[in-house]
Image 1: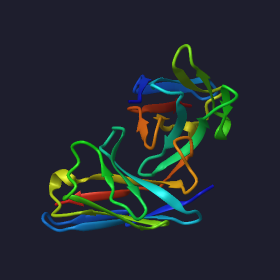
Image 2: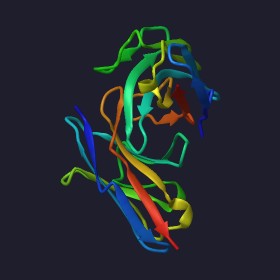
Image 3: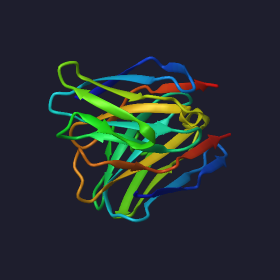
Image 4: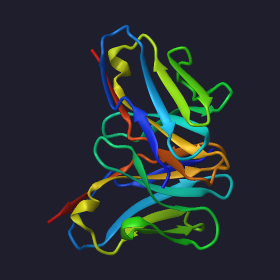
Length: 111
Length: 118
């Protein structure tokens, strides 16, 4: 069965600094990997996903993630944080018919 | 992108009553819809997977008789919390996957429904 581990429940960065949110997965078959963002009292919005092909995936709002099979990782990055990036971020893996989420990482951006 | 709506967005009810939450895919057909529950500051926990025209598949530990799911059409799934109790208070989120979608297809999420049972 698939599972996801997000390292760090809370990450704080300064505005303009690099954002790095870590995600490691476990899957018995080649996985499909997703990053979602959730703003307070809202549903989830897809940032990006990896299915097949290029391992570096670019998403919305300047985010990107790299699938590294050897490290079973799918870390999310953004070169320069913006105040509007403050939110909860969820990594997810989909193996068969359903999707499993990590515990989430709350990103705080300091002015 | 695809839009999924939920109604109501917020509901307060008395203990013992039943509450129905609707999830609609507005601009695409969803063969599969998912219902999640999210406690404060926690991740989403999958409750059940709903396929149009068939019975929902519930995750271990989720009471089928308490959380009734109906997926009557390709654009509508409903979750009914029967005889709600305060411990059922939570944020319920649905998602929908396009009719052609497999595991790699994106799930589109509704905005969530906050249930408070007094």
